[in-house]
Length: 472
Picture 1 (cartoon, rainbow, N blue to C red):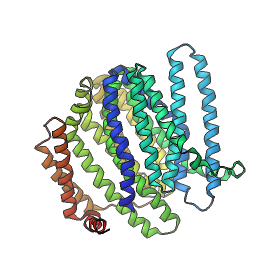
Picture 2: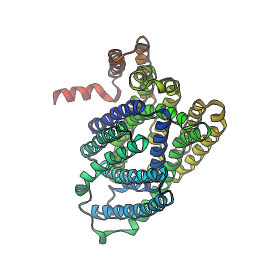
Picture 3: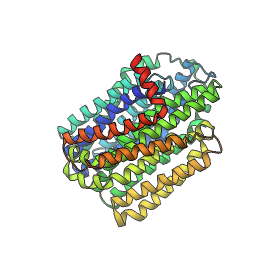
């Protein structure tokens, strides 16, 4: 099931990742570094607000959907009413903001931000419902639809000269439309009298610490851009954002795929009292997570310069290539913490621990940014990000073990490292070649050399799985 669901979620994430690369290429050609900086400030600021006010609901949904304490109608009704109340409050605040800045550019930014906020809220909870129900195909349709429409509408508005605000509007519409298309089948069992305050309290108690941690994580991710814009200029924020987004679109996507396929199943097995089966599945998940993410980081650093040369406008290339090793390492550490170490707190029902670690991460990041950005610019921001996520991973690994013993597959980890080194050795001889043909060759060499080594080691019993797939 892990392999099958991972493949479906992989498709659901791979196509948006390709679209994200295409969007980076498109927007860096249509927007100047300063305009891209404004776009990324608007986008990350809105995502930050979304995670502040909404993140606790999807987190609680993933954790308690399989619980038998509440039926589906009660669950859906409770989260729907909660969303509506929060969105109503945000709408009132947005109207007040538009009236205050009426006639100024900021009024347009606020309207765009609210539209994107509305879209993100509906899209994210729909995504998480499909994940909690273990419906990977519907998850895939929703996600692929969003990524395709966002770049199409956003790119068109940018091409027509609407600039950063046009791109934000396009992303908002592209995010909202697929969620509205699936609205009826998702919320058809809504029944207002079944609203449960007890369930809401349960979701709050579990989800708020995770939301606080997400808030602090987002603060860590966006503070560098805003501090670069404030202490340097918007162009520096734009240059940094392209480098960060390039890594995030690939490495985090890969890690999220494995997590999406495995985490709901682990929760379901625990709820059914199948502790041993849950532990075995968690071990497979851990191996798969490392087996995909570690070679991805190494491969992106070796192939990345050619990819950047082909996709990114020349105004951004030098900065993005310079940032690549710093940001890929930071993103990997963040993913390792979020998708592995932090699960000890979630499965041990001690989510407050994640929030406490998030405070430390945010403090380290902001402090280092304040110190290093005036001296080193975007490199200082990259060092701050890497250092803060390194601290977070160490703290999460150290204190999470008190609440849930995570599996540590040492032998499999060693095999993954050896296979990655074999891949790196093979890629080293072609890494400096430039062009689409050479990129295809680089990807072929990297993937095939890694797969051959993994099959030779029979990681995750892959040889038997291949035989079963062929025979079926």
